[in-house]
Length: 192
Image (cartoon, rainbow, N blue to C red; front, side, top):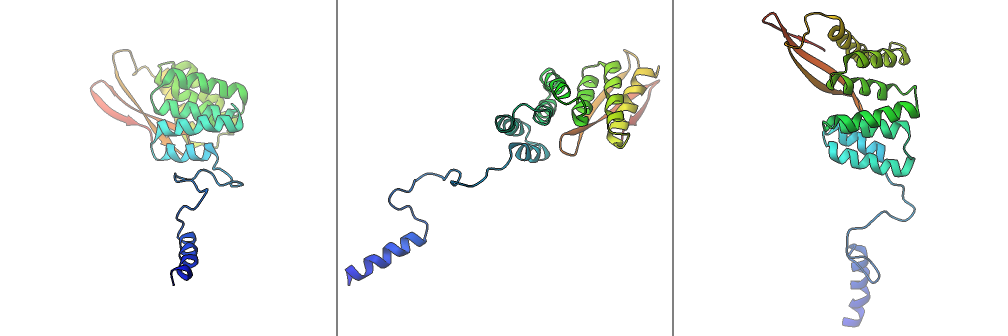
């Protein structure tokens, strides 16, 4: 009876997914012939979840798949921006705008970096360019441009005023600048 049960047990073991001869005992890798998920998509999802370091790693994998194109450079710059690495973000976003001078998200996020660094005049110029390239379709870019122009042109802003900028993530790597400022002892919030 034992001899008759052995083939049945082997068949049962094969159906349960238990490792057999030649099978790996560790977690499986990519199945041969299966397609991997695009690193840009993974990175965008991680950014949406607030996992900026992991998103940056996913974007770096995407660079290996796609090369350092404007989309990858912009995504990496956006992750660095979210991590507060303004110098690295600026460098990557400038490279993205050089790779594709019509890539609006890179221009917008470069403007946000410049605002954060206090380079208001250049930020206003960059937001103007992004808004024009987008054919004035983006409310986010218009709001960023409005804030930059107000900061640049409005005399209520001075070196002694209290300015607090905060970044609000909108979409897959676009940022909106919000500012709270006090002038003459009254507080007011700009942004939307």
